Image: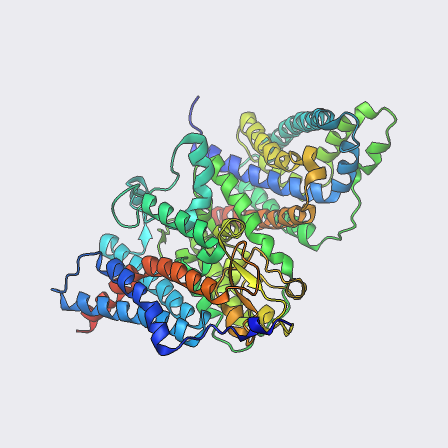
Amino acid sequence: MNEPTLAEKSLMTDSFILGLSSGSACLVTCGMVMFPYIMAGRGGVMKIVLDLSVFLATRLVIYFVLATLAWYFGQAFLTSGIVRTFVTGSLYVMFAIILIWYSIGRKKNMKCPAAIVTKVEDKRLVPVLLGVVNSIGFCPALLLILTKGAAQGSLAQSWLAFLAFFTGSSLWFLPLPFAGKLKKKQVIETIGIFATGLAGAIFIIKGLILITGGILNG
Amino acid sequence: MDNSSIAVSPKKTFGKALLYTLPMFLVTFMFITGGKPDFSDPARTVAILVTFFGMNLLYFLMHYSGKTDRYRAIIFVIFALTLSFTLIRNMILIRNSMSFSQADILECKIPFCHLVIPMMILPAALTKSIIFPGTILGGFADIASMVVLWLAATVVLGRGFCSWGCFYGGWDDGFSRLRKKPLVKKISDSWKWMPFAVLLLVALTAALTMIPTYCNWICPFKAVTEFEKVTNVESAVKAGVFISLFGGLVVALPVVTRKRTQCSFLCPMGAISTLSNRITPFTMKIDTNACTQCFKCVDSCPMFALTREGIKEGTVSMFCSKCGKCMDSCSRNAIHFGIRGVPAGTRKNFSRNLFLFVSFLFMAVFSSQPIVFTLNSLYNLIF
């Protein structure tokens, strides 16, 4: 297998950071919905692992679809290099500011959009539906990764970005099977919120670099 | 109330303090001279003697006066300043500039610093490669000796490394002492978890990209050591980030809060050291019998390690860097260095003597060479 290029590494890092920030933000909002359902205790850790796997697989499929759509719209609308640079840079800055606001400034008692899904009668569908709602639910990090996907030159790069995004966000769900044993949920949430804020700061800088670079290069 | 525990004072008589200093005299002499005293060069001889007597005088004063942080901070700040001087002088001698080029990276000529360690662990474990462009063994600031020294200091001192061994901690420690009273007093306690978020981001992204992302994008101390040559917008922004973080977290915020804000709110190494505090033999203990709950220690703590609730319960959080500032502020010697397993309020002086010897030794090992080098250079410059 070929070693990833510097550009691919950078793409993966950015997307991974966004995924981390998205996962932490969603986990804080939706933790209270996800924990009780996934921890419902029908079948122990194995059942939790299975539900979690279905949930994550659904998210991965949705992200590949979104990657494809983002890339398609990017090809259709961001036609020239300069438009691509300015639009991407500006959207980075705008969404990153929203991301920081979302992570630090938002109300703690925000409602999780996935809550409604848990009321479905066929409980086998719940992990799938949770995966769908969790993937496309409003999250500034998702807007940022969509922008990134749209700015890529090839579909494979867009997929790579979303794959790294998925990996970063999924890390937060891995401790779920052991959530009952975690003593410091509050601490993990706090660290997650800070990670989200940091990701926002990183993308503001990235956006400014793109815009400044665009101005200097005409 | 157990009055016997209050009566124990860390102060010693002149003779006893001198006796405690003697072993340090011998060990520091070995370290500073490298075991082979060579006094042929007058400039170096002066530098060695000043460093040697200066260090031992401060160690003696720690025992004689019973104050820890007051004298620790002097060496710690001098260490940070002289280390930056040493690095910059070396950069200028080798490259004629504080900045390094891509060629320097490819030739692995970048001096190693311990802040890279959190980013090295995952790539080293997964791919058996070191993701820092430095020399593994031999040469100036090589990777192997730095990692071994850091590991030893961390296992023994825990987060005490941040106050006794860190190359850069002296910067914000020094700035946090400039004002007598803080301008900003209320800072949310939860900010102390920020270094863990930084650690999470930099460790994982470094594993993903095989690039030390903290050094590349965040480290505020790049502003006073070495940084990437500004050749394009990205490197200019990086330089801007380094300078802004240094100005904000290392200079401005410590001055207005009297806290070590860079160490408490950013440093990923601090997060690792914080976790290591759980396994080290030395801890801070609160003698609840002697404590009057005046909370002077809480106000004085520069690392957000003490809370009023904690003091009432007799507990110190894992964020403690064992700087000794709380001890200096306590007139009843209620908060003290302790040894794991030994009850609070007992063997206070023994624990303090043992901790001081070990931690000061680490500080002497880390700091003596930069101090000698700086004094030597200054002597040559003046005369």
